[in-house]
Image (cartoon, rainbow, N blue to C red; front, side):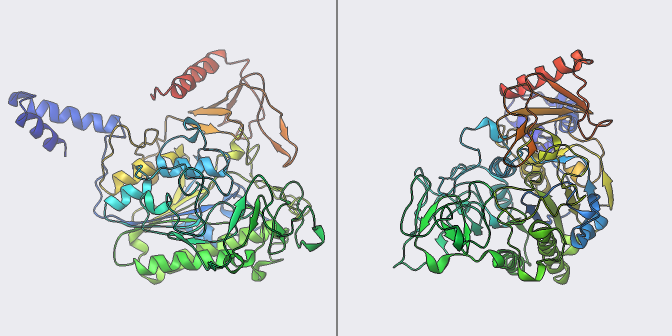
Length: 525
């Protein structure tokens, strides 16, 4: 590739022929120094599957130390692949993490990428370069199944009763079967490609997040109709005996049954794999589990001994197992790279009285980490992260620093695609890290908490920028990491972020503060 670049420069009379070898060598060196310039040389394009859990904690998986719950399918992937101990999503909540994963841009750079209501318009505009569009350009069949939560439709939101535009199919996906937002937000329907599934045109859907629509009962007005009661909020329109966020009327034949969500979306994911088994495919399988409301299928109820939250973890593990089993049964094992990870850290009580707190016992959803979902501490963004590609990735453990923001550039390299300077601007190619070929991870990465608070990790050090705000989110009992003074932690010695050593290390605080400032000002080192 580098020789072709130099040859083109010769044709344009930009360089002298005597300097061919010198410049060719220089480009080769630069491609090693700058991961964005490097292209991985691989003999084949593997199928790529990202299994993206919702709210799964670092300590919720037995291969990451959980002892009260057993996740054999996830553990099998870990035993057959590479288990990362220092991999991160970009944000401590759903929408921004998913935005960054697909676009290669930190969500905090773009307004409107906070946790979205269910009727939000699309925040990734049609035609934008995404992970899906890059792989589609490389000849992959591309599909997304499960939770979306990135908005749909043009400004003003989607037409639930007609063709839904500005969705996955407009940013690189050939196929989608999605939950529009979250399980606890209306509308409680599935969308397949551009239509609501099972909608009766004589019973149109109306959605409103500001005022009540229609005559459907709400949890606030009729708590006696509920099979699961809210602990805070979540008291609007009742669907399937559970009150949600937002108001909805109509669409009765299209409403999902919570107990069947995992079966439905896992089945759709399996069908996508089977349909595209004879060509390279990319599947982004974003499960609903273990997000609230936690209403697992009856065959998982009571199996964990930890209530619906624990049972939902078992259901997620089953979904992982179904995907792996499908790949193995189709003899695609050596041709398929599978990633199992999460969009953010754990939360126990996130709005419903499902006994998650009472039945937690000595289980630690975040493992040794401090904080969880919504938090600036690592419990919010350091996640379980497993990569399996039999025959290509040696089983083991990696301590390399890795970020989901790098999926786009990394898989562009894996599929032989180039990115222009303005595309995926925060994403870099770390294919050698993902494949276990190198232990040298990212030099630094930025984490993003719910209130906009940023943290930066460089080497062993993590700095949480100072700022106002409560120390505890009283609704979820989560430590948020807010403090009027800088917080500095040595993660190698203090993975639980218990000892703030900022006063003893003013030089490191200044170095990381200055680096974070440059990154925020769009000057990417």
